[in-house]
Each structure stands twice: as C-alpha cells, then as structure tokens.
Image 1 (spheres, rainbow, N blue to C red):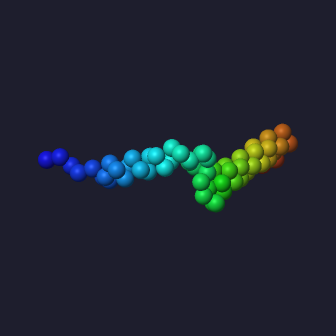
Image 2: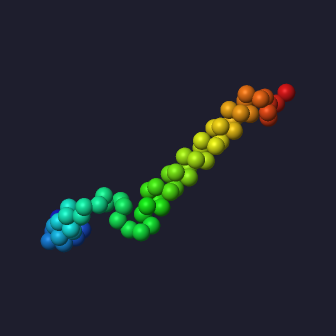
Image 3: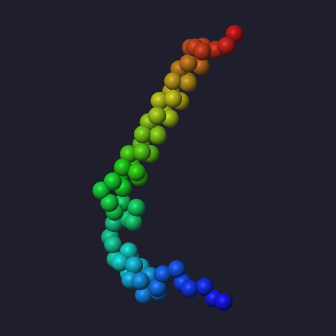
Length: 67
C-alpha cells in the first residue's frame, strides 16, 4: 500500500512559485516578524552583556565572594 501525498502536487508547485517570486526574505514577511527576528535577540544580547559586565565588576571588586 502506498501512502497518499500530504498535499496535492499542484498546490505544492503553486506555493513554491509564490515563495520563489517574493523579493523579501521569507522570515521577514509579516508585521510582527521583525519583533521575533530582531527585537528578541537584541534583548537577549543586551541582557547577557549586562550580566557579564556585572560579573566582571563583582569579580574585580571582590563583591559577593564567600569566605
């Protein structure tokens, strides 16, 4: 027994032609896609830089060291 395809080949080819003709990058299509692909990584980067800077400051001044 052979399995039926997930979607018809005609529909697949139609979608493929549509996405190949789009000029923008695929992951930046919608209004809120820039938030997930730009804002959230920038927030993670800023938070990690802050925490690394605070750790270096604490290490250099001996703050939070257990005796």
